[in-house]
Image (cartoon, rainbow, N blue to C red; front, side):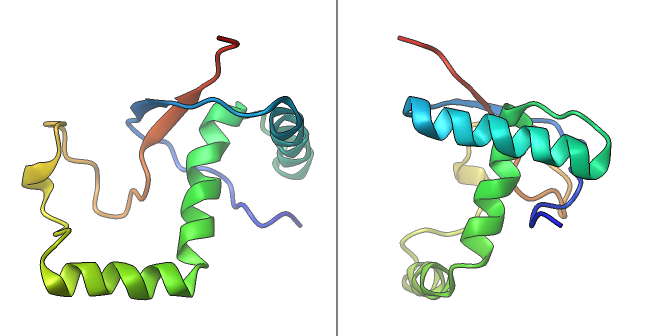
Amino acid sequence: MIKLAPLPRSNPIKLTIQVLPDLKEKLDDYATIYEETYGKADQVTDLIPYMLESFLESDSAFKKARRSLQNRGEKPFSKSNETTTEEPPASSGIRSALSFSKD
């Protein structure tokens, strides 16, 4: 079974990135395997935020460094610093949508 669980539904914040063609092909393949695994087609742009969240959650060095930032007060988790006015549910995790362009 693939590592990514079925996606919860969310209220996304748009984030645009560019990826190399070989990575785009791998992401498309992942989306195909995801559909075969769960019987539901989700767009690559819907899967990526959860893939990134899973990656960050599995990176113990990142989590330790992030706690250090918090403890130094350099990067508080305060929602007051965010530009969005909509508060996602506490258990929502990453709420981003990525789009691809060929610019």
